[in-house]
Image (cartoon, rainbow, N blue to C red):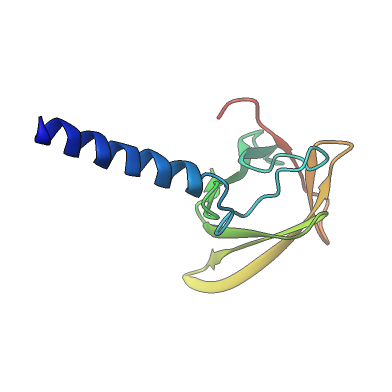
Length: 128
């Protein structure tokens, strides 16, 4: 009986801790207000040469990954304000690696990420 009571107390404490921690926003990279475009997921565009799907995957933990862009591996992203994100990565060209941070404007009306100083527009992929 004592073992059952102890197990119930441990489970109760775990549930209480989980429910208290549920509203914790520490470490989150995306706002959840209704007017904010959900940024988590795959953002793609069509490649200019062979129509290959190119893009960026933004993950909830703040990490990022390139899609079909091996010479441009992204590793992390951050929402800087309600209309801008930055994505950190590297550019690998002719055997040289350079760190970079690309800036993207969030176009809520068009559901797009527009890379600054380029004509590149990424749209959210429906497949996760």
